[in-house]
Amino acid sequence: MSRLKPDVGPSDHAQGPLDAGLVLVEYGDFECPYCGEAYPELKAVQEAMGDDLCFVFRHFPLAEAHPHAEHAAELTEAADTVGLFWEMHDRLYEHQSALDDRSLAAHAQILGLTEPLFQTVLDEHYAGRVRHDFITGVRSGVNGTPCLFVNGERYDGPRDAESLIELLQAMRELQRKES
Image 1 (cartoon, rainbow, N blue to C red):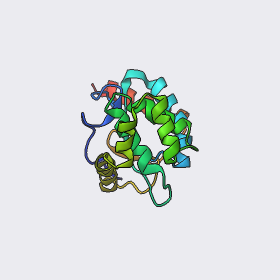
Image 2 (cartoon, rainbow, N blue to C red):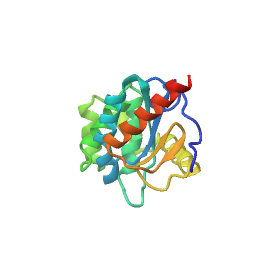
Image 3 (tube, helix red, strand yellow):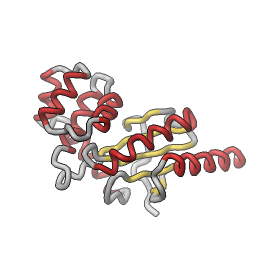
């Protein structure tokens, strides 16, 4: 089984406490239809698990198959500079059919990103951060998206909310018994 490399840390995009007993990492691609299908499932998992879960998103754009994925990932990084990473993340998955540069500019405008900030996306200013996530994914054994890790171990089971919640609740109960 593959291990997550590196471990989750403060430079990751995380929702929930970094020291939560349960950490779910997704390597995702904004243009991947399977990631689009997983998006509401992972939202439901987060809602069900609350503060017991830290959810982390790392970029893994499959640029050859998804030509708009890299700029979409870079746009979330630009949005992060003004504290809107998760808002942009959600918007892109909720409007997955509109990821060409013109549509990305419209998403940026709707969330209030300035034109000069959006231009940094076209100039690939954030490509290094996206590439870093991609490389960590390769080192972790990611070979497609979405790819999930639970507490540092690759998870290849069902990705529906019910299955993930059941797994995480069982892990939480085991942690409570061991402490």
